[in-house]
Image (tube, rainbow, N blue to C red; front, side):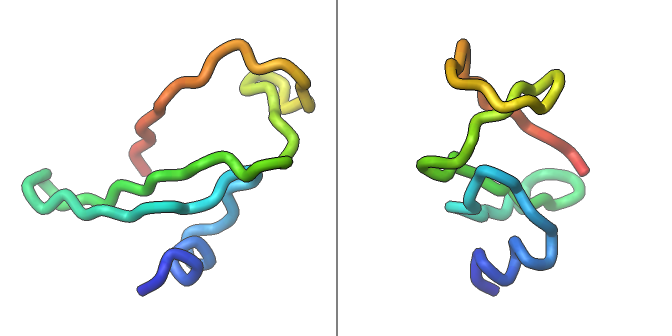
Length: 66
């Protein structure tokens, strides 16, 4: 299954593209790890209000379980 097909199944990641999918079989239960990268030129959004911003104060790596 390709990244485009997987992204279509999972839904949209506005402003980001799916660049890598890895499987962690040692985890219980096994899990998939999706690596997203910002799309060049896409508007940046505030994580609180979702408003468009021009200055980015910090970049963090987040892990989300779903």
